[in-house]
Image 1 (tube, helix red, strand yellow):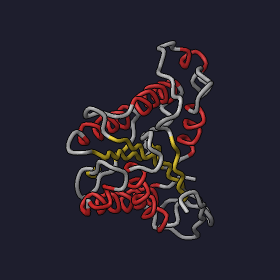
Image 2: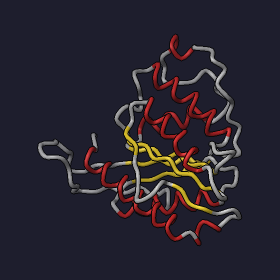
Image 3: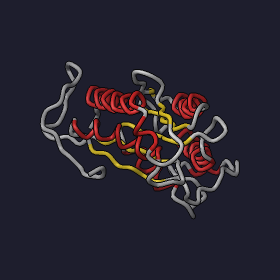
Length: 216
C-alpha cells in the first residue's frame, strides 16, 4: 500500500559516496484536490507505485479540502527561525516537518483557472517562507509538480508549482511529456493512456534521482 515503508540494503549510488549498510529513503506527495479519490489522486498513485518498486518509502498527504490558512505576511518566521509557521491551527507545520525529512516532494493539483487550488497556493506561500527563514530547508531536494485538467491550463498549474521548487533551491523532475493528464469526472484520467504513462515515467525518474543522491 502507498504508506508502507521499505528498507533497502544496496542501492546504485554515485562513486565515492559513503552509504550505511541499511538506508531508508522517502518521497512524500501532497494532494491539493478537494476530491480525495479523484483524478489528481489517481495520477499521484501511478507515480508512487513506480517509486515503491525501487524500495523507497512513500506517503500521500491530503491537503485539498482541508483548512489551510493563507499567509498573513507577519514575517515572524525570520524572528523565530524555529522551522515553523506561527499559524498553528492547521496542518501546514506538520507537512513542513515531513518535507524536511523527505528526499523528494510531489505537489499535485487539479487545474483551477489555469492555476493551482487555493489550498496548495496557501501551503506553498507559507512553507516557502519558513524554509527560507531557516536556511533554505528544501534546498537540493527533488520536486515534481502534477496537474489534472479537463481540457487545458495544466501546464500553467505545473509551472506554478515548479516556481515554488525553483525559488526554494530544489531540482525538478520531468517525464516523457508535461506532468499532466486529461479527465473531468473522477476516474477519467485512467483513459488517458499517455497521461498515465507520463506519471509512471515520472515516478521512475524520481526514484532514479533519489537513489543517486541519497544522503543519510
